[in-house]
Length: 320
Image (cartoon, helix red, strand yellow):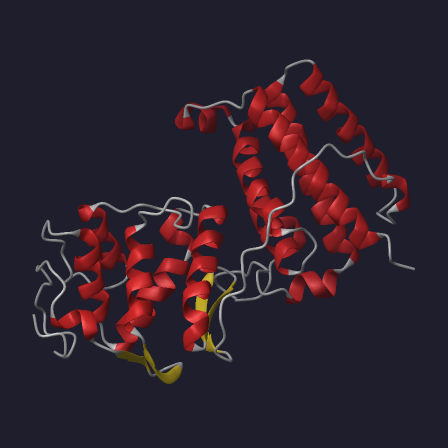
């Protein structure tokens, strides 16, 4: 395969090995005129393949690699059964400038992970760890990824995740929420604990999700300007305007809270998992997923909610 061939000639990439394409250098001209190093391309190929479960959200088989490139708008790349890593590296090396940008954006798009916020965030973080040395950063406006130029740097070492520990409830009545909301949230905290003690794990996780959603909405109502201007604020697909708070999903509230620094990243990741279990309030959703929260899941979820609620309470307390 001629790695320098112009894209869009309609041929299929169906070769193995790591020949001339391995050393090709590409430009993302719509963002910055700096060549992407072959080591960076190799790291992007690794992320697409997804063989490192600790760093990559999804592992893609040979046929799934073909489908990934189709979703990225590159149906000519069809895996031929050769070694996945080297084939993928040749594929990204053979891309044009715009095509490589499309591959990067697809890797960061929540649609690639069927809306799983935790997986999408993991992919976004890994992409930015790889691209920072190129002076590039991927961000999301709503759910749409964009690439912008930044000062080239080295990736910061991963932040050690704090251990989740049981925490007491905050004083909900002192948080300055709308009248009556504090009392309701305090009662839901107590009820969630009663569910856990009674081994009513499904009811417990549903109650925990509602507690988290209620306080997230309360904080957004206290800081409407910040919430509406957040990069993760959900927008109407027709008008492109930020939707009203009552139309935000729990997932979108979590994304905004994380983007604004209201909750820690580790809490954000676990909160998305909690959201999935809260959705089991719908019997058909539980039937489709064939799952139910057990004791361990419920206990972890409760620690997550306690951490998130205390993070959000700290956001509210400094207000005059």
